[in-house]
Length: 526
Image (cartoon, rainbow, N blue to C red; front, side, top):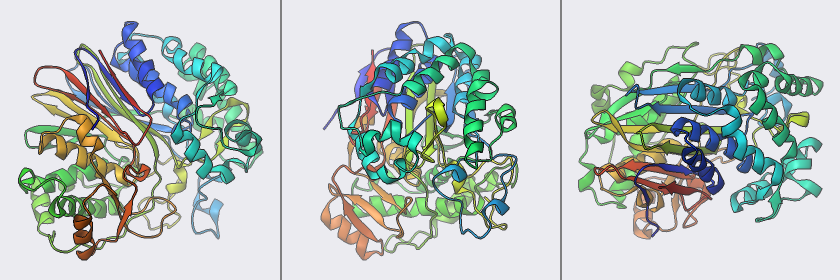
């Protein structure tokens, strides 16, 4: 089994090795964790285009050694001022792809500016250089990019400007082929010179909006100019001596905290890892969190979310009494996308950044905004068209968001930074990682590499099945099926489980980094 990378001063983990190296490069050039995080994020927007882009959103958890507190930044965009249900009259749902799905302002670049303005040492120009270089001079296509391109090929070929970049000649670029994004390089160069305003008030915004409106889109220059992300208080709970932080709604992060509160009522460490009881307990605890998430999660500016009750320990005791250790509980689950990239950075001063970014579906809306080279997200397609639904589409509203970076502290200082891509799977994989590390004493790499599961449907799937990796004991899989779980055994290392990353600061102060063998990432420490 792979072992965690150990650093004495710094650690960078991300789902792409070039992005991890870009972060490490910033640290070696005198930058801090915040500079490195932005460099990683920007680089991922180039070398991981099926998962993230300048046209997507982000959420951030930060710890500054100067502030000595955890903060959260909501870098998700709001719907256009012109976004209304009537635009989709006669349709059951907002389209998943195309111009009519690109209805929320991208929040990514605003998040970069927030990190650099609040805590950074380097300039936009310095931290964007690796991303610019890879866009201009090319990088090798990974297996993951190739396979996702093949899977999405028909969608990518439907728009000429998108096909020209991501499916040249109508085919998926081969693994190992040098891949260029020269229009995106020019956009990044403009951004390096002009900063945040270049994206939300300058040529870039004008180009995006002009192209969208020529093709029936609804975003306006005013929508871009008015966009602001928010520094917000993170939400948290305690778990066996750790304080575990998540981003507040519109993130689904509270689902994972509810699950930990339920699991704390059990002596998890005494349950054999990998047993029927292990999987069943974690799955059933998560489903109870999903039930409340599905009822309440949306933009809290539009509908109150009773977090005090949902995150209380007495409520967790009430929920745990619903768990039947011999029988699976039925629960409907919404269909959510899985294209996301999680990364984390810790520097030698102890500054820590846990962050995640996304386009929603693979390649998002599949719309490249004209000559900008920017893929636009389809996050707005998750709004409901039901006027009674808590997440109903309205103007200037943030939608239910699956993105949820996590950070666990002990004695007031970061000890574990962790997260994953995977939509519905994010709370599940996070729970697996954290319990493996805290309850079973595993290091980051072992906690990520061991067999995983994902319950519920991701987009395109109709059944509420429980996917189990093939390495899980067949007798355990049979027991889960007998208990009422809709079991489907998948590959030994299956992409449906998402691509997770984690950093642990141990008792000696060493930094242990783990990345997902299911992906293309790397941990870089020194």
